[in-house]
Image (cartoon, rainbow, N blue to C red; front, side, top):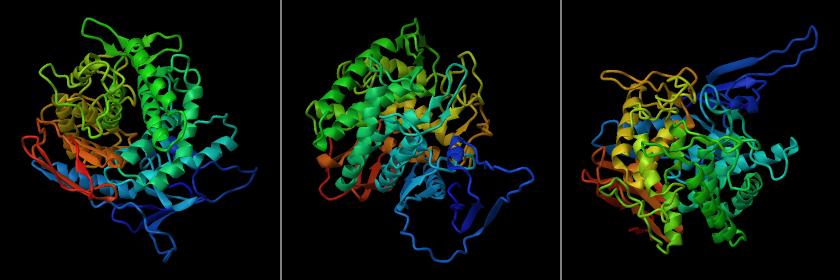
Length: 533
């Protein structure tokens, strides 16, 4: 791992060190390599040691994140999925050299063994059900990357640093720094919902305000955010991240007594209306969201797993419910007879209205996108499809998890359940160690998902996805500041009975049991938390 430190293998005790250490920035970009300058006739020695840690006692604080969560249920894949994910996550923990008490997750092994802000924030967000300490440490570590960016000549207001990646046959590479900057205020706001202490919230608020300042400067006159910025294109998932940054950023400013909350709510509402009109493309099959708008405004209508980010999240529902005066909401109502759960276009919590959300759910559930093992990054019917292409058809685990949670939240249990069973099936073929991605070939009887040679395994976002989908399966929607927690699982109970223990809410153990008929009982929670409606 970068920074001259050591990496532990599963089970502990195995240490890998390098002298000189690899370049952290290059490692975060996906390459573990060294850049050495040599004079004519000169030489350098590179030493890599793999062995047991015999350095003796070191005066470091204990690692502040070691979850003791467990899952059980009718489906035999539930328990090993979580157990293996936790083992993978423990091996990816890294102390921040500037503050050893803060830990975060590296993106994955073997290619990306350093702090990658977007991946670290995604993993921390999905792991909030296991406590807020990892999120707090990750947010602080990511915020410390700003001085380096400014010293390197980044303009004010600066976005978080990050590499370019995720190129495909239809779009150029995206900027992970844009994604990280938009994720930062959303992760902080959601951590507050899960019980982040006020002292941590106050210390991280200035960094969230810097992210909002960048968003204000980067958005065009329509409110759309180019990615990479400037120049574009305008990706649909980037607008979803910008919408949540504005919506949840407004909540942070409000609760912390900072000015500007009304402005950001207005910006979020305006972006929602412009997105629904500008990004939706009509066709005889019911329409679809554009994957992006070209810089000139032309919609690019190919469809892939990034569209999953347009689905509503529990945080969206909670914020909208508070705006409507309901302090104890759960996720969206179960699906009605027509497959939709959102009451009308104006009250729909995400970027799409009710009809558009329903159409997107149907598209995500069709064989062109659902490979049977998870969502393809590009639909099989789209030009340029390649089941091994990074953004041309390969299945990305964390986006499949985002789709599962979003579909459950919106009430589309059939589509969510099919994706969840596919993800569990794929995990079984990988020894329950979910890789970052795998090939998007169609599932066949007796077949198995094909591994991707460029995938990290273990991967922080893939391992965290296991916690994310299990939390969504139980329908857990916390609002610690309001003193409530809702548990509203899908009525279809797609995996039968499920029990989650060792989750953390408001710093205390949290446990929930879901029956075979989709009824949830909170069995353990922090004192004072009341069941939400």
